Each structure stands twice: as C-alpha cells, then as structure tokens.
Image (cartoon, rainbow, N blue to C red; front, side, top):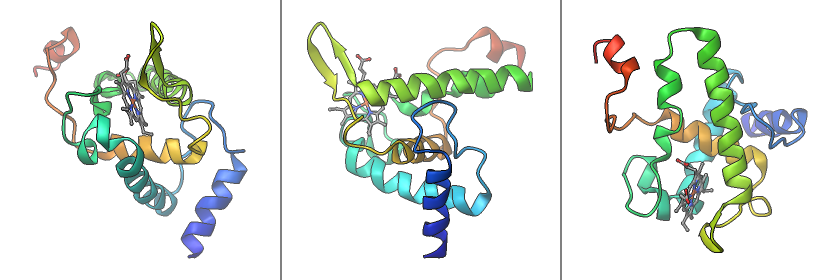
Length: 147
Ligand code: HEC
C-alpha cells in the first residue's frame, strides 16, 4: 500500500508527463519494481493482443517492442547510449500517444486519451525488462563486439 502511494506520488512529482525520457527509469529500485508490476498488467490488458504475449512472444500483428532500444544497449559510449535511449523514449511516447495511422488506415489506435503517461512509461519499463529476442541481422556494432 505504501509502495503504491509512493509510486503515485512519483507520478505526480513528474506531472504525469508524456515527454521523454521515461521519468521512472532512474526511480529508486522499490518504485521501479512497483512500476514493472503495473506495466506487466497494463501491457497484458492493452498491448499483448497485437504486440505478443508478455512482451516475449513475437507477433505477426505488430512489431516486437523489445527491439526498440536494442541498438542503444550495444553502444559502449555511455553518453551516446543515454542519448540513444532518450530518442527511443521520444519515439515510444509519440507512437503511443498518436497511434499509427498510415494512408487513413489505423494500424494502432492512439492511446493518449486511454492511458495515463505513467502507465505508458510503466509498460515501457516492463517491455525493456524482458529478455531481448535474437537480432534479425548482425550490424557493424555486433561485429565490433565479436557477436
Ligand atoms: C490493434 C493492435 C495494436 C495494439 C492493441 C497496440 N499496438 Fe502498438 N502497434 C501496432 C502496429 C500494427 C504497429 C506498427 C504500425 C506501423 O508502423 O505502421 C504498432 C507500433 C507500435 C510502436 C512503434 C514500434 C516500432 O517498432 O516502430 C510502439 C512503441 C507501440 N506500437 C506501442 C504500443 C503499446 C505500448 C501498446 C499498448 C498500450 C500498443 N502498442 C498496442 C498495433 C497495435
């Protein structure tokens, strides 16, 4: 209970922001753990049917969200890795807020009016906590690291 209150307070402290970076990534461990649990439930409720069960199952319907930051994790320069992750957060936030409409066809609905920003960020933390899928192709960064 006190943990949930703490998480709620953190959300308010950040003004329920959609703007990147994910404000919960650097939260204290206990609060991050509570966000992860919230993210798991919200992912199952809202995202799993298209993006794959438990953010672990690749899906034919929609991209595997675990791949969004895989490139950033390979960068060895800490500053670059941080900037890369901020870009990913901005792209994630925009995608979730606006959904994906191409040529008038709604591939993904907009979530702006359905999800609180804190819930969207909790979902991202949950997705990022899952084991990464195999890379589809090797990049020059993989080669440099001997993968
Ligand atoms: C009705 C199916 C559907 C649901 C439900 C759905 N998505 Fe999507 N999502 C898609 C599709 C399809 C795409 C790819 C669309 C495109 O690029 O044209 C997508 C793309 C995305 C992207 C961009 C991924 C990339 O690699 O470019 C993000 C981020 C995303 N979704 C997050 C979410 C989150 C978070 C949820 C749950 C709150 C969610 N989606 C629920 C269908 C869905």
